[in-house]
Length: 159
Image 1 (tube, rainbow, N blue to C red):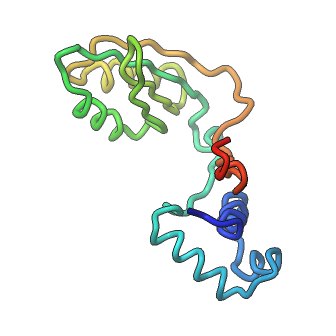
Image 2: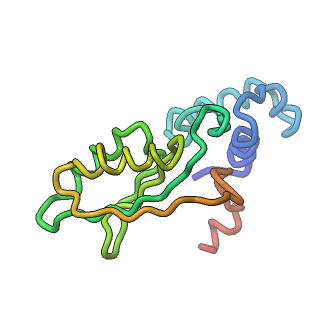
């Protein structure tokens, strides 16, 4: 279980993965070496899975976001199709979902023409895909963001 210091460190890293150990240490009134030790332990435990940057998709020619619902044939296992979808470079998120559809896929492409090609030439050609339904995003109020790290009291009380 994570303590309050680990949660504070994670909060700082979520806001800025490039923040120095010394800056975190100053804010938490700790030694930089202690912060480094804790970060290394969080990495070893798999709590911290990596460090990344955020790119404005429009600035690199990916101005269209869409969500695709994928329905597969009933006799086909979900593993192979899910793995194939996950390998597509346009796929940002892939969720195996309950209900009539099998997958909810978030994609980023240049435009509607690129979305059409993705659906026709890649997703639609996967063995076992019965049909797809797409929703094009008109605007985005919030995307990504930090995980809401619960307070220790919330964790202890199951809130």
